[in-house]
Image (cartoon, rainbow, N blue to C red; front, top):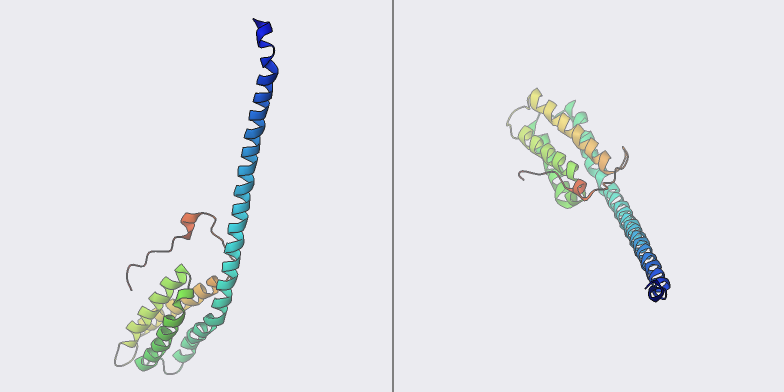
Length: 172
C-alpha cells in the first residue's frame, strides 16, 4: 500500500508548497497594499492641510487684528456699547465670509465670542466691568483658537477616524 502512495508524495509536497507560497504571497500583497493606501491617505491629508493653512493665513489676520483692537479700545471709548456693536458688525461680516475655514474648536469659540460681544453691546449706556472682563476672556480664547488652527502651537494629526469628529454645537 505504501508503494501505491509513493507517486503521490511528491505531488502532495508540491501542492502544500504551492499552497504555502500562495498564502505568503497573498499576505504580503495585502500588507503592501494596505501600506500604500495609508501612504496615499496621509499624502492627501497633508496636501489638504497645506491648502487649508494657506487659506487660513490669507483671512485670519483680519479677524486677529479686530481682536487685538479690543483691549486698545478699552482704554478709550469701549465703555460705549456703540463701539461694541460696530465691532460685532465687522466680526459678523468676517464670520459670514470666512467661518468655513475655522476648525471645530475655533468655530465654537468664535460663536461664543460673538454672543458675548452682542450681549455686551446691547446696553444703552455704559458696559459694565463684568461683561468687559468676559468679553476680553472670550477674545483671548478666540486668538488662541486662531493660532492653534494655523499650527503655531504645533500640528496634531488625528490618526483615528473617531478623532475627526467635531464638537457638538447646540445652537446657532
